[in-house]
Each structure stands twice: as structure tokens, then as C-alpha cells.
Image (cartoon, rainbow over all chains, first blue to last red; front, side, top):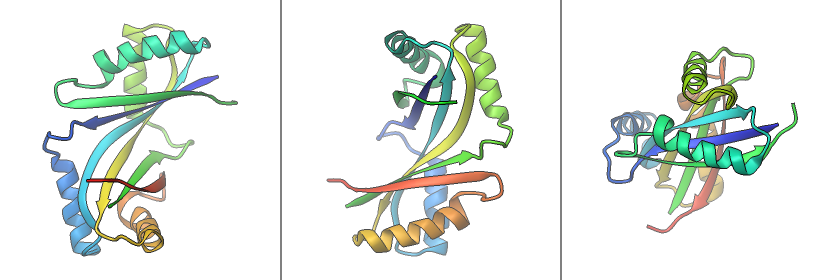
Length: 84
Length: 84
């Protein structure tokens, strides 16, 4: 079976309040550890499609149109064969 | 500079309502594409620490105690050298 791993992250120039909150927490609990934190999403999608090239083309469209907001986010994915 | 990439995902046996919602949406828009969707978090953390082994040890503790809920989530991380 093919499994896609998609990451959706805020573009570098976009402010990330969730990342700031995590950094502030880390600053309190572990001073001097983190300089900058950015938070994004990771999706693991088990695919019905078994043709890797077809899956890649459709997933690219899905990432652009459904899973990310192209105005503020960017995405990346990889597709791998997994057992079970 | 060292940058850590941390992924925090629900354990396999834990129900994932957000993943279900994404799968249902994909089923509507792209029938026959996704079998199962799991949603997690990805964090990119720019580190102040420059010693990779020290960073690894502290980050492991941080993942366990701050960034994940070990009851329902699991984490993984890697640390790489980045420029800028």
C-alpha cells in the first residue's frame, strides 16, 4: 500500500502565534534552548491508489486545493510503499 | 546553527477525529483517494545549543515532558545543521 506523508507549514515570512507560544513556554521551562519555533501540520494518508505517479499528481492537486492555504502556507510530501 | 524537526502524532490505536474529518472531506472531493488519514504536528525549532549531543538529550526530555502527551501521542525528532 502507498502511504503519503504531507507536511504543511506556514511560509517563512508569515507570523506564527502558535510557534511563539511554544517558544515562550520553552523559554520558561528550558531557558536558552530554543531560538525560534514554527509549528505546522503533518498528515499521514494511506492511499487507495496503487500507481505512484497517479497518486503523486492527484496528491499535489489535493495539497494545493484542500490541505493547504497557498496564500500563507507551503507544503511538501513524499509517498512510500508500506506493508499493512 | 542546529535545527530540530519534531513530529508529534497520535498513537496508532488512538482515535483521530481531525484525521476522520480530513478523510471525509477528501472522500467528497476526491472519491477513492484516501483510505485513512492521521493528522499530527510538526515543529521546526532553531536551537541556541550548538552541541548536537547535548541538544539531543535536552530535546528528548522536552518532547516527552512538554511537546507531547505520552498517554496518547508519540514523537520523533531529528537534528540537522542549517545555515542562516
